[in-house]
Each structure stands twice: as structure tokens, then as C-alpha cells.
Length: 53
Image (cartoon, rainbow, N blue to C red):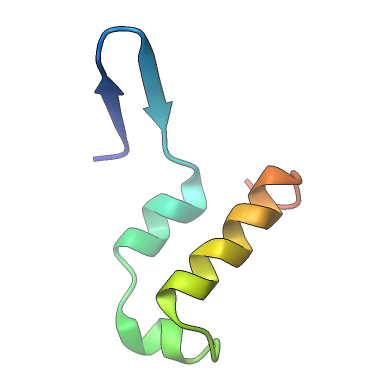
């Protein structure tokens, strides 16, 4: 699921990186040298600064 609604006033569309990361196997994430949580933080910063989609 790539989007969901909270109440009737807010809709959230996950960024592409988050959708792809949800289905990513743990061995691929281990290759980055980061934990899943740290990788999510890094990708969120890059997304918030419009470096990645």
C-alpha cells in the first residue's frame, strides 16, 4: 500500500524511496553499512532537501 488516509482531512503519499525500501531485503540494506532505521533517516533528509524523489 503506497498511500493511506488519516481521518478525512489528511492524505499521505509515500515517496518512491520509501515504497521501494519497504520491500527491500535485509541483506541489501546490510551492504550499505547502515541499519534500516539509519538508512531511513538518511533518505528522509535527502528527500526533504529535494535531493531524491
